[in-house]
Length: 194
Image 1 (cartoon, rainbow, N blue to C red):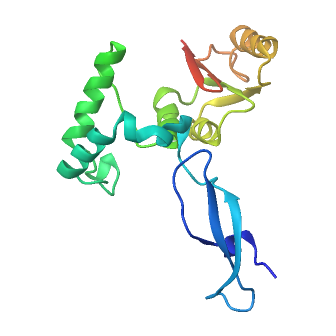
Image 2: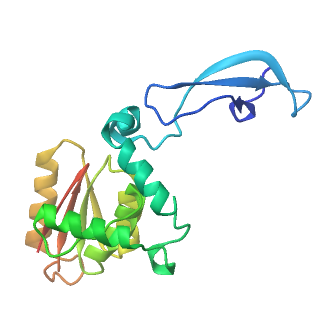
Image 3: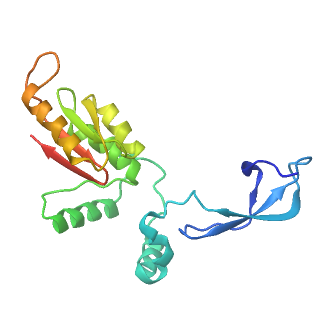
C-alpha cells in the first residue's frame, strides 16, 4: 500500500519547470522506512518564474557566485528589521535609473510586492477594479488596502468599461463623492487613474 503524497521522501529536487521529482514511497506500516517503489512526481513547489532557473548557468552564474562570496545568502529578516544591505540600495538605484524614475523600491518576492505595494498606492475612499483571475497576492493586497473592490470578468473589456463608467459617473456608494483614486488591476498589469 502507498501512503498519501505527503508521505513521499524526495530523492532529488531542483527549481526547474520541467523537472520530475523521484520519490521513494513510504511503507504504510512504518513511517521511517520506504518501499522499493519509486514514484515520479511533477515539481509544483518551485519559484521558477518564467523558467529562469532552467538556464541560470549561462545567464548569471558568475555574478551569483561572486556576490555569494561577498554577501550573506540571506539577510534572514525584513528590510524594516535590518535586512537591508548596500546591495539592495544599489539595486533600487539601478532599477530607478533604468525606468527613468527618481527612485524605486524592491521586494524579495512577487507576493510581497502585491500584498505590501497595493496598500501603499491606494486606501479608503479609493476603488480597485480587479480582474477575476488575479493572483491571491493581488486579492489579499487589495483587501488589506481598505479600498472598495469591484471584480470584473477576465478578458472582458466591455465588463470592465461598464464598471469603470459606473464608478466615474456614480462615485462612492453612499456619499456619491468622487473616488480619490481608481486602480485597475488587470492580470499581470496595473494602471492608476487619479
